[in-house]
Length: 465
Image (cartoon, rainbow, N blue to C red; front, side, top):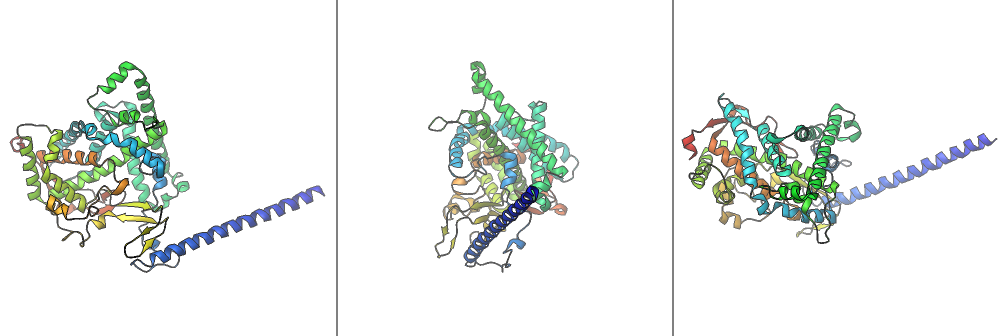
């Protein structure tokens, strides 16, 4: 009798549990439908193509552009890129001194050192008198610079552990891009069952272990007076040195987890974006030889008899800077950014967007908007002359985003682009390959589906002066 009663009790309990779950699911569904209806009503006031009754515009959106928040968390952790609210504000404030111009000055020599290694490699490739894809080489150069600026080590001074980290970051960047390209990989459960997913996890572990070990070693060294003096007397403090030394008003410093997240963020955000930026600027230089020549002449005049760049030289590269900005306008390294509204936004015409709306700001489209930029497809560096900039809205040109969440490393990036492009123009003339023009592919960064193939003609030593 007891087993029968127990069986009946379990049966009733299962029915109650099923009923409760069904009610909760139903309520959740109702809530989602009501929210969707509210958002749809708000969107009806904005012009756009017709919406599907269930999917809205989702069917027209590229399926390769998912919510990347979880993707980033798995690799970089909760750094500036994904933090929100007070925690973001705290990190932003703590990290800002790390991008002061006094810190950035010595990096000019670091950028130049990495660039010369790449240019020596290009000397050999150019002898074959064939075009070649520059994107991968620029990527290795950018990562080498970041290794030096973050940990104080470039590829020439790496031990086995450092080399494994270097390879892991390269692989993570590639795997991240592959995951975005493959819609079936957007689900974590499916992705981590695949060979690509397992490679991603292994590379994450290598990257995390390396950063954790370097943090432990650097913190231990700072406890020793002699080691501390040695670190502080280096020709430049690297990013990790600076992070270990920052404190807020209450003396609170970053935890080891926060340190790792910000180092990973710096490595990720500063690698692919700079690679894209430099590659597209060189492409623009190749398309417009008259601007390329004028930039080269400006650099030669600034250098005079010197053969190396100095910090003060960068501010004098006015025409090169205008060309770089015009390239960023046409080929923004980050083609779009996303924001989720924490509160409603009301527009001057009476329309509004409710809190919680996910907004995609399409920088690529903004930079080619003909109501803002006359003849937007024309490459015209003079758009960025002081008089033309003064008459334009400050948010018309936002390659580094805008507002309080703009790119904290934009000055670092601009300096690196200037140094590398200047050295490239002193060593080579660049021309496009008409048979292999790049096919733009907007993803996390603006890439080319078929690479960026250029012809390089080495300049004689005398022509560098």
